[in-house]
Amino acid sequence: MTGALVLETQKGPFTLRPQRPDDADFLYALFRSHMLASVAAMPVDDAVKESLLRMQFRSQTMTYRAQYPDSRFDILERDGIPFGQLVLHEAAGIATFVDFALLPGERGAGLGTAVMVRLLDWVGERCAAARLSILYNNEASLRMTRRIGFVQVGETPPYVEMEWRRTGGQTIRSVAPPPPERALSMPPSVRTEWDLDPDFLTVNHGSFGATPRAVIAAQREWQDRMERQPSRFMNTVYATAIREAAEALGAFVHARGTDIVFVDNATTGCNAVLRQFSFKPGDTVTLLGHAYGAVRNSVAFVTDPVNARIVCAAIPFPGPTDDSLVAAVAATLTPATRLAVIDHITSGSAIVVPVQRIVALCHAAGVPVLIDGAHGPGQVDLDLTAIGADWYVGNCHKWLCAPKGCAFLHASPAAQAGLHPGTISHGYGQGFLAEFDWTGTTDPSRFLAVREAMAFPQRLGWPALRARNRRLAAQGGALVAGRLNSLVGTSGPVAGAMATVRLPVEDPGPAHALAIRRRLMAAGTDAPVHALDDALWLRLSAFAYNTLDDYARLAEIVASVLRDDAG
Image (tube, rainbow, N blue to C red):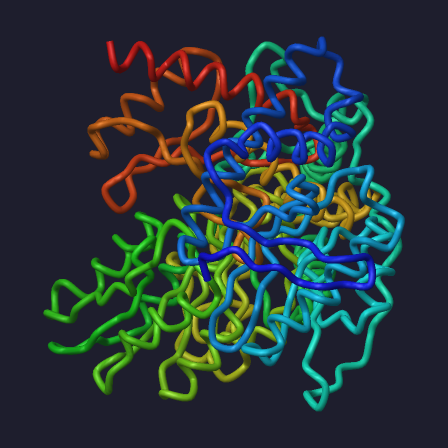
């Protein structure tokens, strides 16, 4: 996989040869030709744009090398002159075109088609299939790949997943891609929808969310309605209103409203589920190695007193894949496993976990599953029925933009018996809804405003907004990683609207992580830092009010803080 190779095409021969250090200038020029349009409209001078492009290029190069160390990294040449590059990864009979790019002058004349056809013949000698990802709005590449036999087999917004199979292989029906996402660019005025401090760099939507003015106004309307006559509201309005809110939320997450109750936060919901278990010595509970600390403590609270054990699935990081995550959980399951508590999106490492596959795996082993979906609702398209977990807890105050303290617990009908809220009140013994809907006097306006919270991002276009957030997080992560000469933690299907960047520091301990986070806060940004697997990782989030400029600013702040830290 390392030697030079000459391949014939209808457009003449071309050579695949391994990349060399002296190819750096060509590779940057090639990268720049594809990415210049993405920074052209930024309100900064050309020198800053050039610096950003070089940061992104370094980050992409380091990420490719880290995540695909055994792949082929080639230059495409004709008559000794480079005209493109190929990064090709082969595993388990599948060839993945990680990167295939030609110079602008070589596009549109059939050369790309001819080269790709010959490459498919070549990889087809060893592999049964080839795969690649194309942006939804890259119509030229979509047309070309369909013309030579690729078909769409999935979507990982904003990408279309394409697959080609050898003649005689499985035939897959092609699916037309959706129209280009209309909300990949947000107008600057959208930021005024939030009352965010303009002098502070907000890149941490994942921790506490940010509630738009319209949602705060809706919450205030509910509060005003309640305070006009509290007794009347609590006795004649609340019971119906809370169920209507649950029905609306259920429609959004593809579940029955009667299987949903509101709780203060995801950790509260997890505790309600955990308290119903009577663990015995020797029982085990499976957690991910990157489980949220509060939930890990909640599990320890119910297992430690009886000598039951937590078993952590070792997370391959950086560079996790769906398959490696499923395999990690599978390795923990034994006849002693009583429960699996699985993050939908890990907090510190920002991994989107294939929970549907893991639920099926656990259920096949007779193990019930609680999904900690603190970051799930709004960040990913959530279908609770398809996921099939016994219990799913999710925050609405993060990616759904609801007021703080708005979360939900979904329990399948078979998993509702014996489930009680942390506070026992008048509804005890009267069933799931009666017990959770009323746990004593509180301000329910945060729950009742959830319909306006869901409606707000809908006005921006939910699918497009999610795709934009995911793409912006990837770009922001690459930019920061490039500035620090480091790498990002995730890419592909396991990456969402948050990204992680490894910090180049010598001390990977949690005390150092906290110290750097405090310095970042003092420097004017809220990006958190986590100690994971003997390294410190910066996490950034992307939401509607963020732009790529935010991450350029973040990169400079982080670089400055790390210089001071090292000094």
